[in-house]
Length: 166
Image 1 (spheres, rainbow, N blue to C red):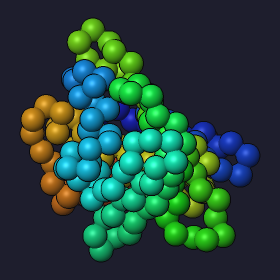
Image 2: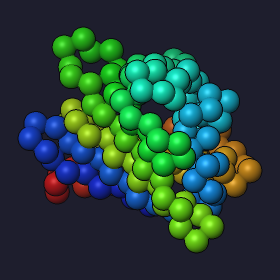
Image 3: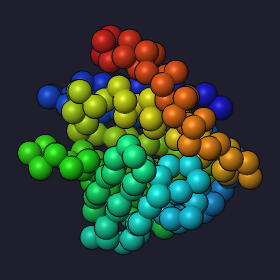
């Protein structure tokens, strides 16, 4: 399922937003956001403590890693955490997931706020490729890392154009 995100300049940063319907309950969708075994199938190798103040650590072997802290969580409805990729001078951005039941499915809203403009295109393309992988995982299928990376590369020009028009 292709659902392109939006990019909006906000002060000196960019907010990336995706709103899409996933073919799973909010509970199953939320589980895919917090269960390290499921996260690894669609996003990255993960450690995530789904409690306020809990740590988040995502690793893309050979590509990088992210660390954060959970700032908001509501069972099967909301998950929010800071996002820092290691630049000690850069303020962390914020990732927020909101899930709402929709006729046997779930409306998933992802907002990645406060992204540096230099990172926004890659983050947006990456999020879309990972969300497409999430769709596959929730449907009982899979999308491997090479497929996700190829899809991300394919999406970069479209997100560059969106940012240039924002």
